[in-house]
Length: 557
Image (cartoon, rainbow, N blue to C red):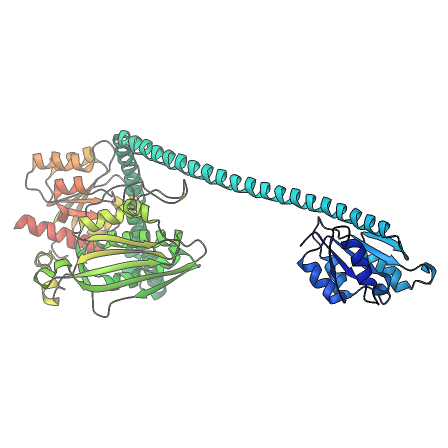
């Protein structure tokens, strides 16, 4: 089809004459009656076209103009135009049409047949060269596509090999990290022990300050008759209590604390902790509560539960850097297996953050494991939650979907609430009234402000009091006269409280003892005096009075 010569000569016998001359030389000719037919044949394929000038008298057909403008880059269709001798009479539109044809040979009529055949042959040779160019362009395009495909395959292979190398490198890195973690296990334990001692000492000093402030505020509240002063003292005391709770929460990151299980309604605890959670997560995160309709009683350490809840809330906040919603759910559910109809209390913290990859979810409770950037997380938050839940006889589980959020759920056995008439402690009822003035207490405390506050508080409660500033002075007071009760601080210079009590009990085995301390790790203290004989600073006058009375009652019993 491409080798055809199209002829458009609509007047008289011009088309037949031209066809007879051109076709006689062995060319394939197609006569077109009008411009539309010419355009259709051009679309089917042709190498040259012969036109008579009369076709262009009214201007170039618009469809032909669009065809010429739309030719591919390699194509420039040759035209042979048979013109009249009166070129000077050619209209402007006809002249413009000739220029628009582009690749053009003009022959004036009457034209010699050989000249016409030579012009057609020349046009076909030019068209053949265009076809060769087309073939070259096609080959170039195929070569480019081949190169592009090979480049894509090469990039794919490189990406695969890179991924394999990255995976191998990740495995090697994990193995190295695991080996280093195993090798540094003892060192990590020593570091934690050092952090515990350091933080415990800081907490001791800070709690001593809070204790002195707390007792003096209570003295002001007791002796003041002006309501405004009493109100100021009460508000300041509330701030001191918040500082004490904050200290206890901070200390739980450094050392494992001895749990003090108590009966709690987790709904009430969540409500009380809501303000602190909202402050901790910031204004970008909306905190919502979805609490069970009935009370959810559990037996656990309230301070450690609050710390666990705060840890989960802070983790959720970090997963929502651009803000989101944090929802705390509480619900009652049947225990797994439902042995004996037992039930559990579930406390869930749900966020709308970035989620955790499935491959990492099995590691989130491991100590020191964190998905945060270096320097932004200790990796102890969820491990503290896990340890607390298991130590309390419960459990913890995590559900997370990347891009949708994470839910961490604590599970504890449901407890039976204590009836009001059972809540009173029988030993507390035996606490001595302030009128027992003969009861003498020896206070051994190295901090002058704290010692003075305890001494004045005991005297205000109508006890006789002696005091000593350290363990050596306390032993001298014991030699001078044996008191009814010893009350000693734990961290003191020289001889600490445990050493002082051990020595005092060797001298007087049955002497009642109270240990007053702000130190976080109470395990060693409780081994020495028992958990019922420990007063955690800061404490108020009522707690002091009850503790002294209970210890004296136990000694009498």
